[in-house]
Image (cartoon, rainbow over all chains, first blue to last red; front, side, top):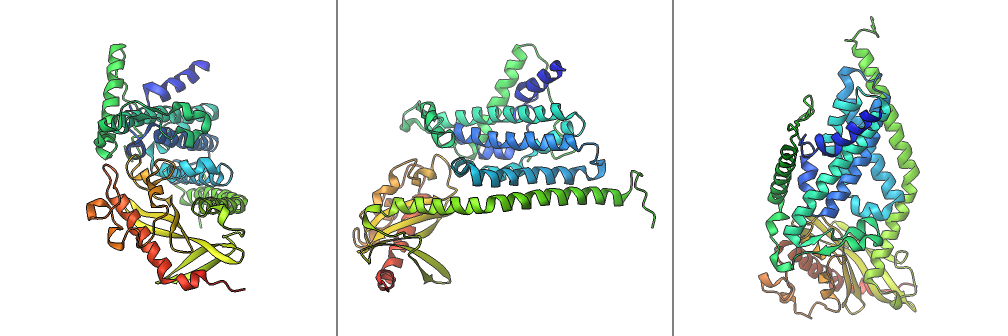
Length: 228
Length: 205
């Protein structure tokens, strides 16, 4: 059983990473990675929704019939997003002011829907919950990496405004790596998102090749649109 | 009527399942909404209070500007003016202004003293490009504080524009549309003050 869990962790974080292998969730990936902090925030909000909706679908997987599963999944994801939105606004208001912008965007992400279809609809509750959690964490890692690449090249900083998102203790994360004059604006503009994502996919595949692994092209949610 | 509830093709069964899920999650959301509504309203009021404090210094008033607000008719829209009073006199006002940015509306709050001098401006809601247009945010840059102490006439009206348009205000590198929107919004905001000065400063007791 613990072997199974290890596979879930490895799949989510690396082998079948939502962004770098499945190429799902491209809309928030491109839009929200103008800085490492933004990417991280978007990733964490998505992770919450994925863990919760994977859990719910796994619990009710025997009751949800094949024919109505897609509307039910969308219903569950949308409900979880709204739930997170309202509770954050009410009880974690400081965090909400920073993350609030990202939360509604999760509905347009195909990764949660893809995991419900491919994983949570057929696997046990605990495994599904972990799959949601680690797929979300892998998504966060990829978005933070893309955000860091774009931020360093585009603004010369790394983790700017991390203290706004995580609290004053994280002020130490905020560093300036390059002087303002060297900023390459295109990295922050939309083309930078495509360039950074593409570059990261290449880097990941090169590492896999060097380590002698076959390139894993995971199930890209074949019954769902392949991107959002 | 022939309901075959076990048959794979039973439309009724699917309708029931979908209906039950919709009702259950609808109820869950309604319940969450009821639970959070008061709290969210409270947070919004705190946010308003916090943004007012930034544009009306606490030293110039002894009232609660949120309570002593008046409503002006600006075109078709209502404009709520929060008034700071000291010893029964208006010492400053704050109201929301808006400009058209690069990515939709930029909402700002403008604080003006009784003579029409700017006490402070803060961007409260906007979707400008992070790293570019978001330098209007006081948390990210002090650009927005350059308007403090200025008024219509200082600089003269035609200089209330970004440098690119012949005005006196710096745009920031890579972004012209955002600062232009902010400067225009402030200029219009000062006009609102001038047009309604009598009404704004009038205290009925």
